[in-house]
Length: 252
Image 1 (cartoon, rainbow, N blue to C red):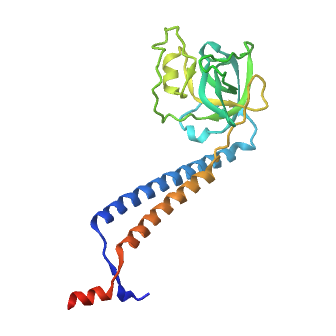
Image 2: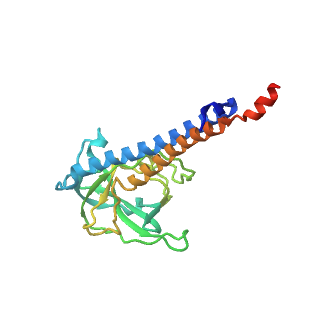
Image 3: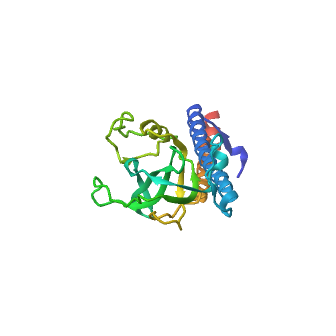
């Protein structure tokens, strides 16, 4: 190709559109990359405790990140009147609930939430499945899970105060702050995911923190690819081939 026959004629509007889309694509790529890095950091924390023996429930919760995924055991009695069915949870391709039951800690009036596992939703989603909750004292073994508090919800808060006897059993998000407001006992700021080998639970195929990391990275590379493609397309459309015959005729 003779470069003398090539003219680079960029258009301002094209440059602006390309710059905007390129920045958006890069931003989306960084977002997916950060999600992957965050999950890898959580997996590192998970690996730290994975082979450890279960310890007594900690009493210091000033640094929740430090105790995330720690294996613990705790004794107490379930309080089924404050049981929660956490909606829109999946086991494979089946939709259902996590059953989260408060446990009144032995020798204390404090409670800690126990995620006892997954149950399948009924075909009529308005009908809540019935579960058996032991009434005898329990010794629970599991890992500490810190629910995310970054969520948006249109969920109606039915329970207004600690004396209101109406209890909304199905929740869309594990809103720890709201739960603490509406129960008459002090609630620890953690949830214990019951060990798969423990009795009194349901399906417990707990997902590893690094689940779907490869997919996040794949999405990130796709967004970066779109950014590069946008620039290349703009450059290609800005290059024009000069017809020498037309130029010569114009000069006559």
